[in-house]
Each structure stands twice: as structure tokens, then as C-alpha cells.
Length: 166
Image 1 (tube, rainbow, N blue to C red):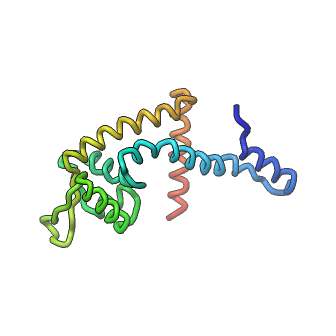
Image 2: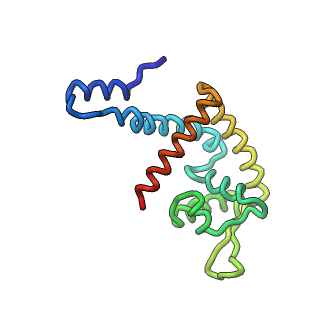
Image 3: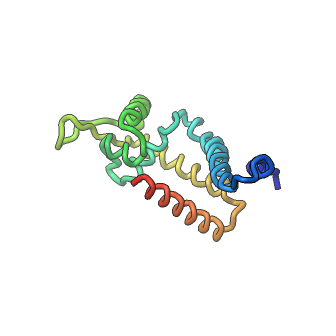
């Protein structure tokens, strides 16, 4: 097993400031390092498909919405958890590539609907299969039970953090 730099940091703090409990770093520090490591290992197929950061998130949100694979900018913003301005920039790039199209909403002429094109559906279906295979590969060091346990713990942490936002 590799050396754990986070455990080393906690141990150093224990010696330098024994009055402080640095053990929360064992979780938070590791989560930060894992986020960066996972992002680097998962981004390659999207880069190879010439997609910018977050572009696949838009394509996937549209694909997950089901036929006709259409959402408003506001719905996309809520689904992808970024501002409508960020959605606009991503949609501009994807539209230029022919992966999505825009249309005027029938119920509100100011609103725009974003729809996956046939090419967008095809690319998204191809990339989601690769993405899920990568995720499975990255989690292979954990048993199915450990993955389930970790998923539950992360969900509980996320709920705790969300409750703190109220």
C-alpha cells in the first residue's frame, strides 16, 4: 500500500499541536485528493471527444431526461448544478458541434429549449458506456459491499451538509 500523505499531515499536527484533533483531515483531505485524482482519470474520454469541462454533463442531462431529450436552460442549470450563464456557454459550444439544437419554447417566447441532436445522442451513449466502465475500474479495489457502504456514507455526509445550508 502507498504511503498516505494525509495520515502524515495528521501525524505532524499531532506532534506540533497535540491540543488539536486533526483527524477530520483524514476524511476531508482524502476526499479532496480523491476528487482531483478521479477527475484526472475520468476526463480523458471527454477530451478525446473534444468536449470541454462540463460539456458531457449537459449532454448526459439531456439524454437522461428521455425522449425527446429536451430541457430548458433553467432545467439544465438545476440538473447540472451550474448557473444559466455557464449552461449558455456550454450549449453554445455543443450547438456549434451539432450535438444540440436550440428552439423557442412554445409557452414562453423568451425561453429556449435545448435538444440533443441524433449525433448528440450517439456520442452521449458512446461516452456514458466508457465513463461507467472507467468508474467501475476505479472502484475495483473495493468489494461490492464496500462500494455500497461507501455510497451510503457519502450520501449521509451530503445530506448532513445540505441540512447545514438551511
